[in-house]
Length: 168
Image (cartoon, rainbow, N blue to C red; front, top):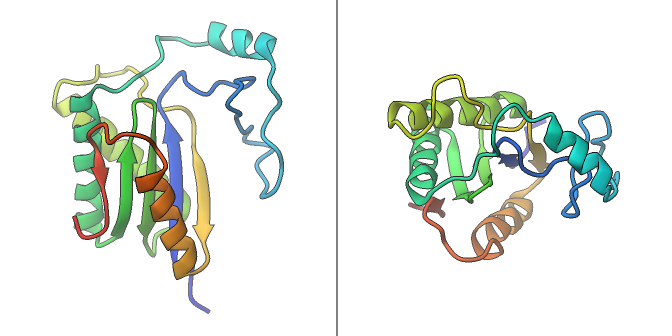
C-alpha cells in the first residue's frame, strides 16, 4: 500500500490565532478530523494573550520571501516535491509530497525557516517565531493535491511575496 499523495500543512506565527479567536482555533487534544474548531470566547482569547512571552510575530515582505526560500530549499535538498507554498503575514500554507512522516516535514519547515530568518538578521536568536505544531492533513489522491494547491494559491488574497506554485 502506498502512502498519501501529499500533505497539506498550515502553521502560524507566534501569538496569532489564540484559542477563543473568532476565526477559530484547534486545541491539540481536540484535533480529530471532523471535530469543530474551539468556540469563540473573548475571555479565553484575552487569557491566552496574557500568557504570551513576547509580541505576536507578523512577517514583512522580506521575511515572507526568506521563509519561502528556506522551505523551497529544504524541499530541493531532500527531494520533496513542493506543489504550492504561500507565506502570509501570520501563517504559512504548504502542499508537499514526501516519504518522511508528516510531523517531521512540518518541523523541518519551521526549523529551516527560522534558521533562514535568523541568518538573515530578520529574527532574533531566542525569540519564538512559530506557534506550537500546526495543521497537518493527509491528501489521499491527486485530486486532493489539486484542490489544496488551488486553495493555497487562489484563495488567500493578494500575493504578498512568498508564493510558489507548481513548476516554480
